[in-house]
Length: 383
Image 1 (spheres, rainbow, N blue to C red):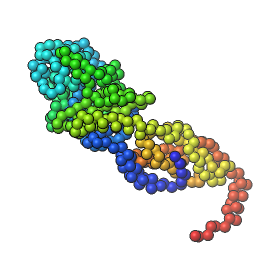
Image 2: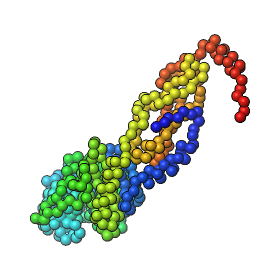
Image 3: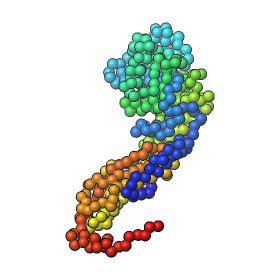
Image 4: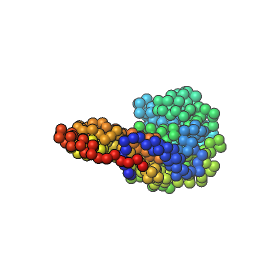
């Protein structure tokens, strides 16, 4: 990346960003109606397609049900050994099932497996009724935690994800919720990669299309209703990096699998964690007037680091901007300008620049000589 020095601000750098943002989004394609790629370490959205639009999440919203349960376990209010009673309503609940039996007791740990692996709507009802007394009351808990966790584009009416006009989540919120679960509850990460689970003598396989089909896949949650289409929240880790992919609105399980695998490959292959400048790195020089040296080195006081699509990194530009030449004497550590960084897909950014050395001024005799040179040098003719 070339660093250009200038004594004025270049407005063309900002104009180029508008086209750059469009180019970066165009570099990633997916057949999903709604999608997001998020970096797990930073929470940065690397790619989004209608990522902030609240849509029916189907069973992907069961991640919120799981998150509320895990939060109560962390608070010590329940444990994985706590027994919950199965009501007739839970037993009769349709859709995907864990196949709980009415009037039996089930440990919270097993219910969590039934929710994550088997996507059991009945297991969700058992959890909701035993924790809050009813589905509606549990949904209030979900909405309260959503506000605390910053899930601004989510609302909940039930713990199952079954169709309801107030059951909505955005792809970004689902990815953010995944980060919360993964970071806050490391002891329960194993739940999401369990390949199969048996209850009531019925064995069901994990529906997540990433598990067993992709290097480093850690699972998370699938979802499907006629209203929502097919969707999946997927998490994978490779070479110390972790990425979350969320897709929804696909028209078949096959399309969901293809979209999830393709977008996860893109998440690792097309995005790079790049350090542009290290802290206290000298990034260029400024011209000096009436000094013992003609230039002074300039440094940046912070690390500049981004996770970007490779096309954006290739289009990055930096410019040193200061009012100059700088007049000597100059002290080391003086703030004298800014480094302006333009990256396609990112907003314009500015970082303070500081002098990295002292420059003494000219002596009286040297100033006189400089003045004489200026007087004897003919002005440049107008072009």
